[in-house]
Image (cartoon, rainbow, N blue to C red; front, side, top):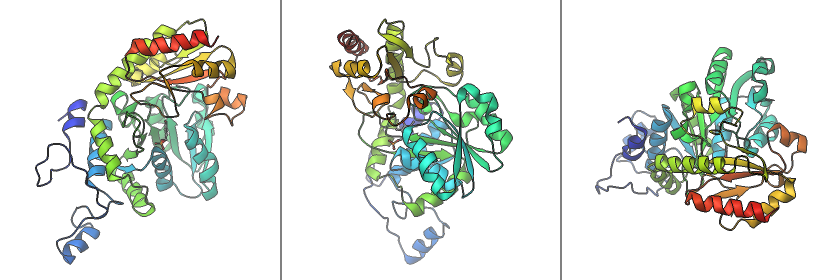
Amino acid sequence: MSHFETDAIRLSTSKSNQREHSAPIYLTSSFTFESAEEARQMFSEEIEGNIYSRYANPNTSDLIQKVCAAEGTEAGIATASGMAAMFGSIAALLQQGDHVLASRSLFGSTHQLLTRVFPKWGITSTYGDISDIQNWESLLKPNTKMLFIETPSNPGLEIIDLEWAGKFADTHGLILVVDNCFATPYLQQPASWGAHIVTHSATKYIDGQGRVLGGLILGKKELIKEVEFFARHTGPALSPFNAWMLAKSMETLAVRMDRHCSNALRVAEYFGGNKHLDFVKYPFLPSHPQFNLAKKQMKQGGGIITLSLKGGIQRAQRFIDSLQMISITPNLGDSRSIVTHPASTTHSKLTVDERQQVGISDGLVRLSVGLEHVDDIIQDLERALDLSK
Ligand SMILES: *Cc1c(COP(=O)(O)O)cnc(C)c1O
């Protein structure tokens, strides 16, 4: 099969002898062998088969198969959280003395990994600014092995040119890793632009309903073999139950993303030019500084918008407290609309200057546009803007 929707729904690992229609949950830590000889053959990889759920499980295989088809990648592993995927992709592929070039606007915990965790093992990193992409060559070191980027970035919604990144990585012999969490494979397929590894927090849009944590590392077979070895022996395995949830959710990713995107575009257009706001940022609004690039590499603009309120931190907090429906919670990509205020929460430890560098003003509110009726989302936001004056 070839269409995204069909593969996401119809691809599945083989049925059990119960002839079930929907995938069962294989809640088992290990699998039995017919004989001592079969056990020997599976351990020595002479024959394929499930051994132990830390290595593989039918539910994780099901999820991986669906997401690989969606991303156009050869192989993958599933992890217990998005951060286990970010960590694993770097830890499995790099060694002491290696250097990572990364885009500055990264998910908070990924930033902690690069600046606080990996240096303990002699893996260092340098940040590049996307406004300065023509100078990234000067940031390379003789030991640079990886280019790690996130696009659109969280929460600044900066867009990095994937075609450029693929060529840059190629020219300089780097492993290109793209965190594709915000776009999902439905909107953007980094591997088609040359990414060697694509990572996901499946917790977000792949689950889509705020229930379970999960992560994915996908990519070329020979690289994933290294990652598999790493995961087998360090144990970030995704639980079969969560894998089952996420594989089921893949079946509705396309229809959910269509609605997230159309709702988000409506909200962004509605509030563009609003007198209470300095700006509204959304990849598919013509006012986005990289609108053309977003159009080039994304099918639609995604489900995340940022609103920058006039009046700084206090005003943003008053606005959030005035919302009646929209939730205040750190997740995103949920069927329920969610707001967060980065300057007072996830990014409060950064200085004002550091926040400015990654596009976070004091009044910036990140809105994950949900699947409620768009008129109700707009009404809640508009009321809260008026009340928080
Ligand atoms: C949430 C998120 C992560 C981390 O994923 P978890 O599932 O929370 O561990 C990584 N990258 C991005 C862009 C995210 O939004």
